[in-house]
Amino acid sequence: MPIATPEVYNEMLDRAKAGKFAYPAINVTSSQTLHAALRGFAEAESDGIIQISTGGAEFLGGQYKKDMVTGAVALAEFAHIVAAKYDVTVALHTDHCPKDKLDGYVRPLLAISAERVANGQNPLFQSHMWDGSAETLADNLAIGQELLAQAAAAKIILEVEITPTGGEEDGVTHEINDELYTTVDDALRTAEALGLGEKGRYLLAASFGNVHGVYKPGNVVLRPELLKDLQQGVGEKYGKTSPFDFVFHGGSGSTAEEIATALENGVVKMNLDTDTQYAFTRPVADHMFKNYDGVLKVDGEVGSKKTYDPRTWGKAAEAGMAKRVTEACAALRSTGTKLK
Image 1 (cartoon, rainbow, N blue to C red):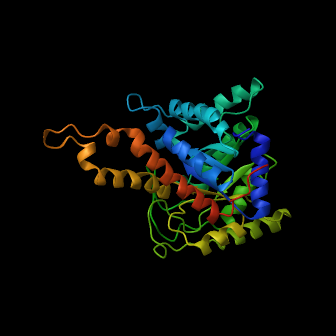
Image 2 (spheres, one colour):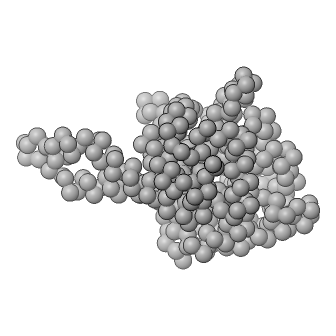
Image 3 (spheres, rainbow, N blue to C red):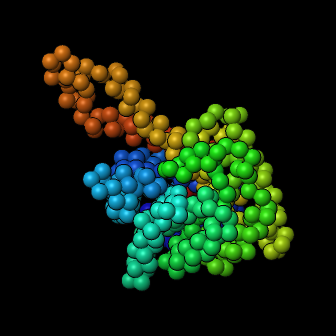
């Protein structure tokens, strides 16, 4: 059972919350990056999450049609087959989907899973993300209510982003400013609209200064201790301890201390994309520079098939990304925690 059933995915998240660790959620854009993520999880003996953004799904759909649903479904079906060879359990997730792409991405994928569940199968994806951070909180939560009901009916977990994360992710851009911090009032309004599990389980991407993309430690002011305030503020009103399952977005460049604080305050999932993109591409650049006269037909020569064969540099790319995934597992304390 390498692809988690809905029941197992819930168990994975519960174990992470109780054990104060988180699963790396690795963005993939190809069969190669999928294998790199699976290999990294397997080498770390960690379960994990594989996710596909709207841009990643469009790329996977091919540049002739650029169909996001086709790309996402194709990779998910491929993952169900190849993941069986890895001794870990993974969940499949779709990343950042803004309002203008819901009808071309998340809603059709929810319908596919609903049909599968009606036929006695498991959903194709285990969770989907609704990114309403560019909307007013009222509109964000209204759409969230609709999607949560549909997700719950299809045995799927919804991820919601209620306030902005800075930087840019697949065309959704937010300035880096003082608005990148979720308030207790924001969290209370979320709990009122979406419940705390009784309407369906959801993951909460709260903002504590997070920024997508590349930045060095110190350039962005992260306040992961803010998550504790959100847990306590909502928990006190509803009589629940640590009511939210948090997601850490924009984690590239985060310090070990910031990550540790986030884990202590309920983060169960941390997204990785920028760092793994670089880890995949860096060995390819190294290979091309070192073997330029083999990968190119310089001055009328014929080059070297062994060096421009995509399998040659592709293996190095997979290894580089897999290594970065194992490092993420160690940082998030998920190493060695795989389901037996």
